[in-house]
Length: 280
Ligand SMILES: [Zn+2]
Ligand SMILES: [Zn+2]
Figure 1 (cartoon, rainbow, N blue to C red):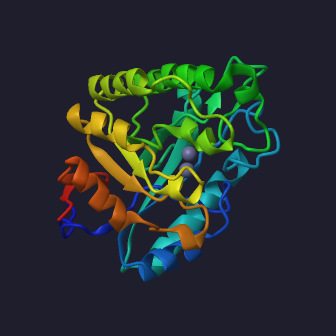
Figure 2: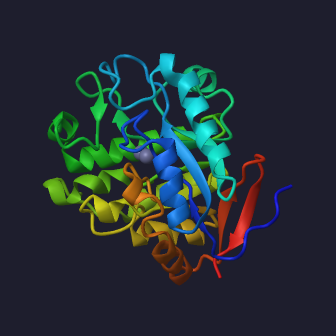
């Protein structure tokens, strides 16, 4: 078992490199993490996707590069013995993904579960891409929210071993892009908290909302409070896509989680174990 982390250590559970849709290399991200005083850095590039979801291979680590991805991660890890690095992937859930995810993520220590892609809408589409809003235009904000929550709960129910559910209220991304929900989200938030609790999932507190113009964390406070009341454990990540974003806002997120009532967060360790780390 790994030596327990000091209370309140900086941990970034969610980061990307240029192998998927990020900008930095593993080495650049590791160096940025060390400079930020990080104790544990989890690398979570977007896993390989079916061709119809990402024809140009812009989002994912494409299948022919999986081995090079693993090797580049290991080289950065070996160059930074002062930093604990954990190898993982962010896995988009879509119907029938289970076999693909298990095959492509083989050997990873941690998997993030997430929903960015909603299926039965004009051939499917991304909900967090401002350059292609056809899902939002087709369904409207309330329709996207409703389908998203339904899909998110199916992802929670999946047999895939997701260590945490990333940015649980991603549709908030378009709140300030002309698509705010017009119905009260409280009922959907209740449903999400129940799904996470009943399926034994952890959820992520993500600082990315602050960098994406949402003006809040993912999840927003009302949903985070519901997760807390339901006893759903929390992880914290930046979802950094640039070296400068690595560990961004993590300590503020700890203070925010504390204010909502959380006293510990969950941290994956390089040996595959999970630890409840006190926030203070
Ligand atoms: Zn994501
Ligand atoms: Zn991400």
